[in-house]
Length: 415
Image (cartoon, rainbow, N blue to C red; front, side, top):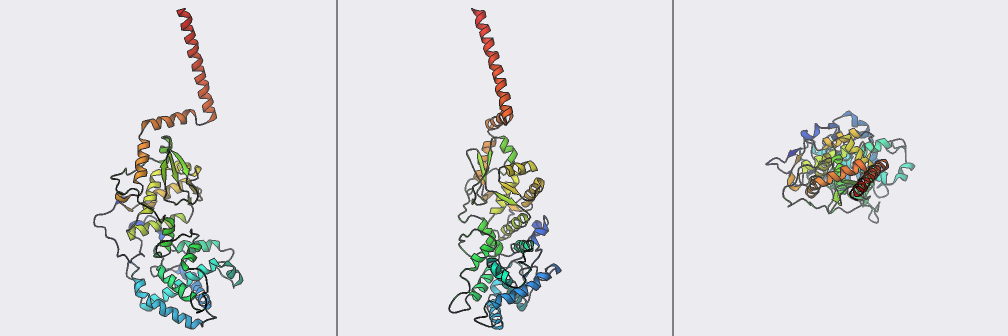
């Protein structure tokens, strides 16, 4: 974990698609490289692994343009789409932090092929009945659910993005082919939410790209920085096991609670449930890389900073599993512990705007109160099971009887 460097410069506001910095990439490079499909210019034609999906893109391009057949020819529609996308070329190039080496024709062709692929993919996922009635589709074949998952994972990688406005504009262009009616009574934004199984909530502005869409639906729209203005805060908190030994109770937040809403009240630390599976690490690593490059927010870095402090060993993971806070689909507590502890490695962090200042102060105040640890130790040693309680009561009864017997003996001696 590092402090934000003096002189750190934010990118121009229009830049939102970045190549992942080396300091983040070296921790787990596979989390940032598309495995199945290349989208956008950064990984364009860089690997043979994408050839099969490149061929599928051409099939989807034809199928997507064919949707306008009642109103225009496929050739005319394709030409009109190219002209429309050509008009967005300069604006689209500015969304990439690094210069794109593709020529103008290559860049527009890439936008056309990749954006048609994404929009057609989303439409097929939305209207699965159409896929069932159409010719064989390898992505939506009943045995290819793993391929769908891999594509979904690739579409939220930071380096694998097209500007969202390009996708939105292409969808609207085709959707409004007819003067009398739209082809679909749904927006591309809603279509994207359905594809990623996101909650349908309003975001004030269109996202920058599909990763940003996933990011903004993970972050509460009314999120406030509770720590701002609170002065210096502790830079660490005890682990989950240590907090439990100081009498802190752990509780999973109610369903529907935003992931970042961690609260401590009435000696109870309430944490929203997080599901840990194969796709978890790549998704959150790319969100963190997006924050680190974009420079305007640090919600996910702060969140994993908290988890990193709470979890230092498999026993901490096991505790949070028992409380329903972690749903572990990896099966191995040590693997989850290692994933969390490496998630914020090599990130720049500044405590000035830390989202959980108040939470850290509350937990440290509780933990460093000696009575809380003594109380928890007493409960753990004598009341953690029915047999411990029975043994304690029996010992107390013996002690009480001994005291009474001694008291009677003293009284008799005095008399």
